[in-house]
Image (cartoon, rainbow, N blue to C red):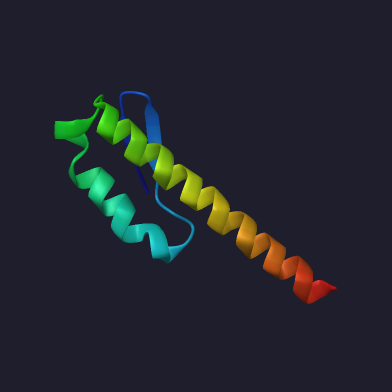
Length: 65
């Protein structure tokens, strides 16, 4: 799943912990897209998604070791 915004698509999270944040971004996309607040929220969302993905990958590496 994804939705489009002015600066590209926002994809649904790989981790269910971020689903409420994704839903918030999607819900308010039409009214807030382009604002500094919305852009900052998208950056935070994408950063958290990256952090959670890396955390999961590192946990798998630890299990293999």
